[in-house]
Image (tube, rainbow, N blue to C red; front, side, top):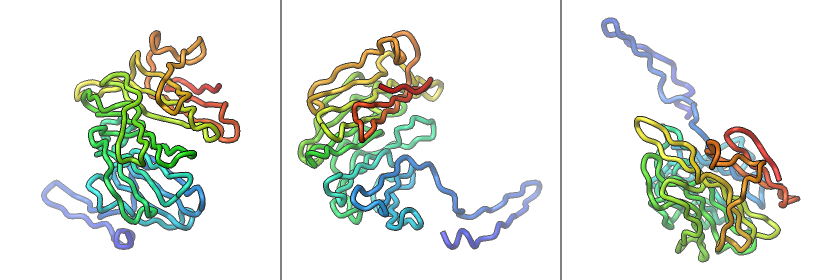
Length: 269
């Protein structure tokens, strides 16, 4: 980076062609996630679309890479154990759905605040929208898997682990073209979970970015059973209009208050 800042642009001419050399330059790519250490807000983690994971120990004034030795540098989401901030999960594969997205290769786990990493499965999920650790049980981890960009695949939906990522179970599956893009958990009662499902498949010649199976689902038993949230005349109805990506969030002080952002507007309950 220091070398890049000191470099001067140069150009060469060959016939009518002129190439200007910009060097490596101080230009960042897309940042897909930012997570604060729940016990120490000076420690921040940032996931990049194709650049791995970076860590700051001074509230973002300086950064250093901590994921460069891994085979996959495409980051979808970072999840930190709220009970032990040394335990970090990284879901690989950007889930935003653009033509220039790069696939991931599953989930990685660190138990030493990012110094070392272990691959823990879900390789075929391709892209991951969210990783959430249950605040009442650190062994219970949820992954919102969006799936492949350019083809159908069954490794989509919500995955749950009851043993800290050693094994995984798919607890919500809709179809091979519908994946989970976002997931929220009630911090007071972690049995209450909500997930946003997104029907999406890209093709080289066209894009399929919405569908009848997009929508919101909720569980009141920790992800074992799920209920589709009916639009009820308020939320966009995927059976009657195009419903694509949905983002969801809750108020941590009032977890009964939930916000949903659709491609056509924002709603709250």
